[in-house]
Length: 199
Image 1 (cartoon, rainbow, N blue to C red):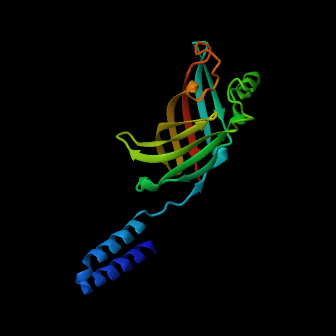
Image 2: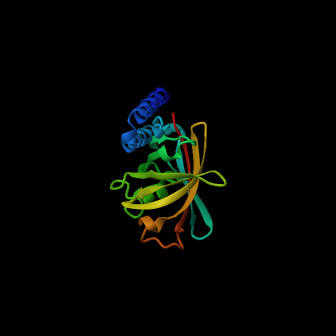
Image 3: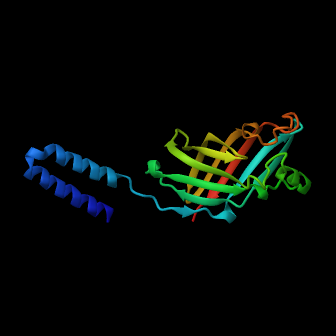
């Protein structure tokens, strides 16, 4: 339908151009304007499959012990087409109360005011702003909002059959998470992996 409509507009403008040589500039403007309106084909919006999507993180505890955890409850919308990156969009959130490090005592502490303050900040969200192709795959730039702070980050990722996988490094103190906890006890660097599937 869009292609047929575009062909019709091109034909009409071409005819107008020939019949009205004195108004060439107006014809050119109308043609370009119509092309711009139709040039960016919209991408269908798909919902995140919550049960198949997760955020995984890893920190170093006490300088030597790796602690891995997850956030679940991922929700949001995905619009993605590798051939139309300018129109792509990721808008996803996870619920902070779902944090799970397989240690309930530690998880309760992480949910407290000392770390994520889940009652006050119930979600961690990412909103994309741009997409580019790289030599090894794809890169999305966007705003990560967590614990009342928003930072621009870049996430290299892959996309295959509606599944998106990415990983990146962030510093928890940039978001004032555990701001009173020494980096000797809990590392500032946090490795994050995201697996997200749409439907």
